[in-house]
Image (tube, rainbow, N blue to C red):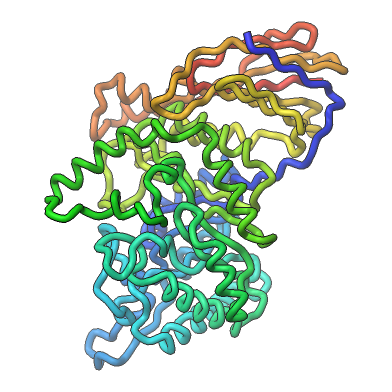
Length: 504
């Protein structure tokens, strides 16, 4: 039995819900879909997300900048019609865009390099003069349509993960150098600030917390404006080495290696990745990035466990809860990638559960990860400074004055490929006599639609009845808990979590 004790008068500090400040989604064109919009509105209503971020705002499927069909090749046509449709919708559901600037419109490209099924162009502009002109038109249009006061509340992030790629790489988001990305950032920031100096712009939008010191040094040396730092991370980054010298060992075929051999090697590498991933690794990364940001606000505009099918079940939910609670107070925003499996970077998926990034599956059924964010959304706004930690169990205590309650979020989590077992725990609150208590569980038998799908034989295209059964299995419920002398005892399965509320 692992025992944890708090006193009602122990020190507390504010708990800011930085985890629902923003959420990620597939590329911009998917935001024109009705099912996408219905799922995002559900996430806004039930999880409280306030901003959304996506790639591809300037991709050709958005028709922002094109050559006229019957015109001369040097002519350009600008249309913000699709952009307006998306941003109008976001504001209508009380959300705002976290604007990612990219990718390159075909008619401004300097290379033919693209990424993903939807072929976002990853090159720098052939003409920075024309790029500056486009960014200025874009910012001016937003202010004309939505008002200066509104657009000043948005964020403008330049590009996505420019450290993945390079001039000689067939993969990645940026087909040029770090220095050339800094040039792109400088032009983009300058064009935005020329329209209004108070528009918020930042970068370097890198994977694996990369380039932050180099980016800030460049901005200082060139007097380039920067209002915030943005970056991304996944727990396996510590093994893959994205953004550092050994990244090409994973990202690029070896000399003489066929594509089939390369993909098989990547598959085998993935199986072993988690052996070297410590629990809580993202919090360690975050602390380092905050230190490197030199006082600027930090926004993680992409993060996830990246654990494949395990991320759709209890591992994914316990990973989310531990990571978010351990990192509370470190950054301004933490944008989970993504809210939905309506996601076509490799083409549109078809299986209801396939290890996609989303909190909701293709049909809008909540995964265990979605339920984790629901538990977080129920928390109060003061967290006790004291934290309980014993082996693979962490307990976080939160005051919720609005309901005259103290909440305890208990999580039994470990990294994949590491030993973890069921744990018996007790939680005691002293200095007061709770009148009743409830518990809401999230584990292999609670809030686990993945398990129900697997029990069905993993149908690729489930019928309505099967979908209804998976939806029913996705729910958690608040139950009355036995409490005696301010103490509750319960069992936490491996990768399980429970939200205990003691009412005073």
